[in-house]
Image 1 (cartoon, rainbow, N blue to C red):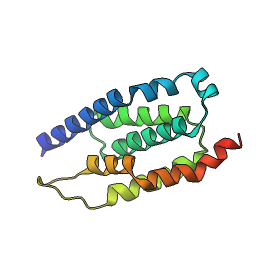
Image 2 (image 1 turned 90 degrees about the horizontal axis):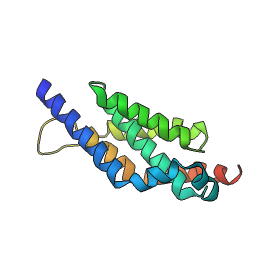
Image 3 (image 1 turned 60 degrees about the vertical axis):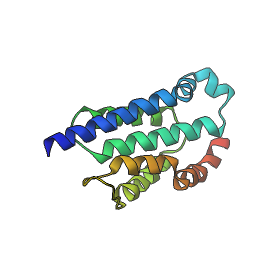
Image 4 (image 1 turned 90 degrees about the vertical axis):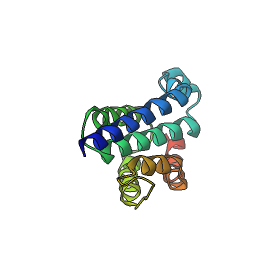
Length: 140
């Protein structure tokens, strides 16, 4: 049992690293205040929100080891850079719960929380949730 938790933790860690490498230009651009001032448009804000959803989902999927704590810190970073209202993140937590509660089955017995988090990241539900709060960005 312990080795399967370690294995799941290592898989989640690898996923986070791969996603960070893949989306590094987006994350780098979002860290630049001048870029946000010039391009406060929705693509940057949507990327921040989706990155928050993924980080928060990974953090909530497991509470063992260093990865969940790291994922919580990443989620806090993305939320801090976002201009979305707090209600967007409250609604995001509810969406995360729904995805983590979905039954997933695969060829190996065990949980598939990583699959749930990736599905959430790519989902239309995430897009619709962002769109629901994006109009408030234009009013700021």
